[in-house]
Image (cartoon, rainbow, N blue to C red; front, side, top):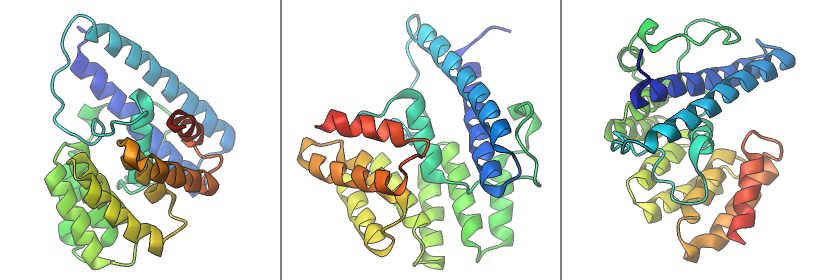
Length: 247
């Protein structure tokens, strides 16, 4: 089969989804540390090779305009595979999963999976008062490039649980993707005051603040707090690099 940008991007999305579920398996205690590290290294290695092949295709054909803005809007120092990891971290472990299957084996192909949007829509309809269902629906909408629908789901979750930090942080992420940086930062101010230990809010704050030299001090503060909360997380090395670049 001819290798195209679309097939490579599809496989890369599968790998990042697998890494996402792998992290959840680790949190749930359904995979031991050695198996986790082995599987993650395998997925990340393949993803890096895919990125190289995508770069090679970029040299001979123009990149089509993406249907979603959820990664491209970050104009600061974050690039490439790290961006995808950032988005997965921001989304958190909120995607619905089938049973308790581990991902230590092969990654399933997209054709073997049911429509994630349809499943999430049915789940949200069946559980209209469930915050998790609204968040999961927003996440699959975001994956599908339906940013407006994703934001409606996040705002619905905010109404159901105004004291929780997840939905307003994701709402801020969509605002940032839409170029509404000031509104996004104001939303994050609210989250950070109420949930000072919610690392995702500080990470996003730094990413948004790093887009403008005028808000570099805010970005430095936000990322410093993030590193205090997540000193050894999967993104900590990248955040330390971004901090150095801001200086």
